[in-house]
Image 1 (tube, rainbow, N blue to C red):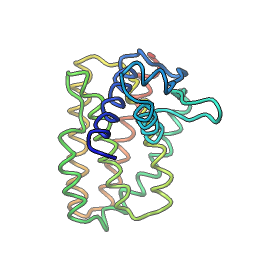
Image 2: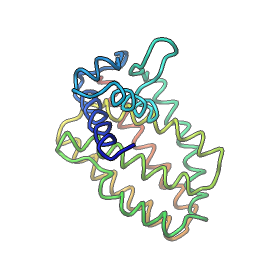
Image 3: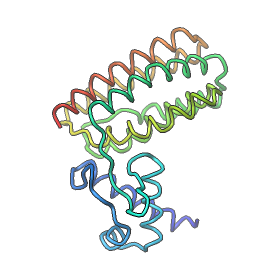
Length: 220
């Protein structure tokens, strides 16, 4: 894919994400390739590739013979996702502390400043992507095949709920600061190769996130 074409796909993808965040596109809505192409003035191929990326990242689902739509995630679904993450990420991050490389730690350090939201509504999509990347570096660093394949789709579904959450500027700032503070502690524990501390910190981090997201879900 050429750089120009990739940029067109990225812009289209980001525009759809913005529509999700603003509420213009809601769970249950169908995303038609032809309509996306017409709405954003792009080719059918670009629209298809943007939809493929949404599906790949768990922000949309492909329904056989019907198309692409934004999935519903119930409160019970969301709670299940977090409950499984508490166990699986605890194991993955604890294992990662023993084998993570300096290159992987550096990657997490680079992502760290972007993993928290700010007062700017546009920061939600950036933080969503960078937060997922931050977690996935550690999960993949565990070298635990089963945990990686369990957690990848779970973080994708979590990704969608994060994008759909409606918050005020004040809430975004507070949440962003807590997220970066948690991630800073996690990174230091990984650097110290302290498996027990890393596992304890990630469990507390996910428990806090679960409480916050379920509270937002109940308001939605």
